[in-house]
Length: 92
Image 1 (spheres, rainbow, N blue to C red):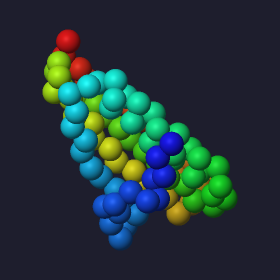
Image 2: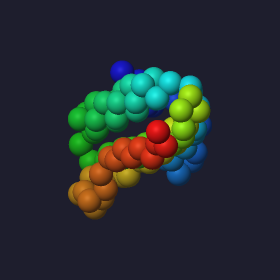
Image 3: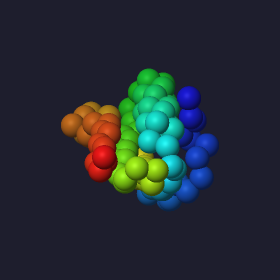
Image 4: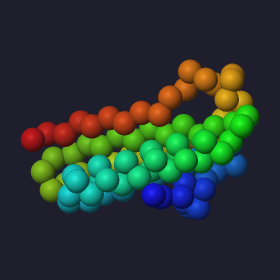
């Protein structure tokens, strides 16, 4: 499981955005799963705030890219409608 709080690139607004490229779709799918698990793990320990993650994998055979966006929300109740998401747009 990836610890999202130790990732580099967080800005002062509580947002993290980065791109990962790989030739293996399976590696990116595993990484996306680990990131989502990491967000869920952190959110379980937070009482009033939460993190939301969005991952998107795109590409063609042996040339894949994953866009990762994680955002911090200071109020769970006010942003209850914000959900984690994962999308894939792959040309086979």
